[in-house]
Image (spheres, rainbow, N blue to C red):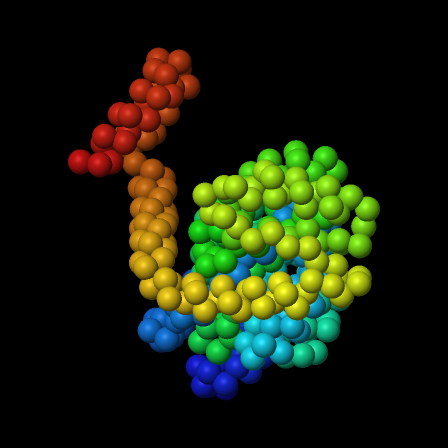
Length: 305
């Protein structure tokens, strides 16, 4: 099988194989990225986040179908906070997104693996695979869980934060770090009681911020607000396409630093394994002859000559 030409044709088996390679085989991944890199960087990335239970998967399912009708070709990468082995979230997401899969949307789960930066690496390169295969926009779904959100808002061109009236104390939920990243805020499950109060709270708390985000209501159950949301995304895609080049430079700078620091970290790890100075100061530390900070300073100085 010629992986590159099958990828270019958007064949699902080739996309699945390439993303698995990105996640599990660094050398193969590097060879593949070398070949496709020039043809990437053009698709709009939409990050959709918010507390667990906000109804993101069902919303993305309906929104993907609506975006397809607006002549776009969406794909979805769902960040799975569970382990790669249990795959609990994978099954749930796939079931809830069956309608969009039937309409031609490509859906894939990516394990977060819990490491800072690991999401970014795997995600950036999975996005490149999907771009090469002709998908635009690429939707990233994640659970609202701190660090991952920051990483995703750094990768996404458009960030959507989803709330629903059942997520507990609404203002507290809103204050929990999701207030600065959104371009669009959605009050989902708007068929439930408390929708108007939550909508007003979001508008009062976030609407006046520097970003001046759009605030909308959606209900998958009643199938309301999905069309206007998809149209808003399509309009934003056109706007963001114009300024993507500038942002791409910033992103590549962050990525390059990440890779360099990762390379250095690996190299330093190898050096420490065989470094006599490290062993010497570890013994002094065990003997309480020196404190950890002083020991670390001495070792660092010996390594960076």
